[in-house]
Image 1 (cartoon, rainbow, N blue to C red):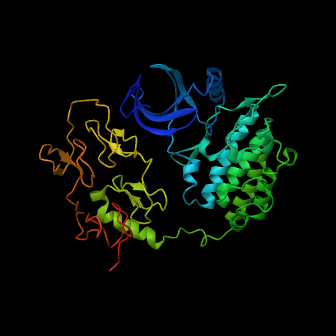
Image 2 (cartoon, rainbow, N blue to C red; image 1 turned 60 degrees about the vertical axis):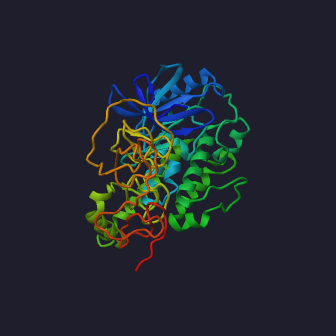
Image 3 (tube, rainbow, N blue to C red; image 1 turned 180 degrees about the vertical axis):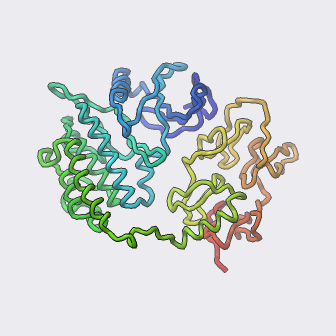
Length: 427
């Protein structure tokens, strides 16, 4: 397992994104191209080299705006390293939060467009699931992980590879078809719009049917129902046909929306948005609340351990940081001259430089008399000696403190203490 700041050829490791049975994926910095990338390191105790090379060659062949591109693949330090575009999060992560119908429709269109392109090139993906769709800024969705993909020639020999929750019945028995990807895509879309993932034996009505029917038109319910039929002959022929049918339904819905009056299409500002705007005017400069909560989309900062609006844990996880590196444990930003993470008491870092970098955000000093190094507001631990901060941090502009941890809070705005998650009593 690689450590934060460890060098791997021209790449500097920032943090670990995920660890699986087949590969590890890291967020890294390309020191030559000055860009951030995702590095995939296959585990050859579980994979054959031929399978890994197959995945690389398939991904390179499929050039499409909704398919994750491979930037480079080479041997570095005894590892086969695959460098890819770095996204913000997976579709699986996004589905853990609320998603509007309009946004879901946009993501569904991109998901099907990517799969249709693969089918046009006679490639069966064989592992369609939310974890293999990556989200990029601007809500751009890209299909990744062609490790199980099969190219259809005169005959097709394949195992039952895939993810069990989304696998088609015939694929589970080792006979994947284009309709197998259609089935898996149908389940992904069903979960996206209904919030539920149906399970075998897929008897109608499926789990989440009522939620789905209340959210979309009957024609769209029928569209998904055809995609997830247990008999492949009853499904769409391939993703090309499925995407064409989706486009037909989506175009009809867009025409209907355009006929609505301008009064109905006005943007309505909610009381919560007004509250957030007022909060940002008062506290954004002090708290650096430049991020949005992954659950309620309220303004949060990296230093917060829970969302002050909805209580969601680690609300800014995965967001871009202004720091030059990331903690591999909590994924918050850290500086190159820190020895430890100041936010989560995570493991120490590989020392990269002896230089000390000044920062105007340093406003206090460590309480350890043998350390006395500078600290930024709302740090939980000293990044130099790992001593826990005992003196409560105050919030400039507010006289209120949390009754549990004694740290400063904006009681007139918040529902929870962002430092310890204690509910805030409204006076």
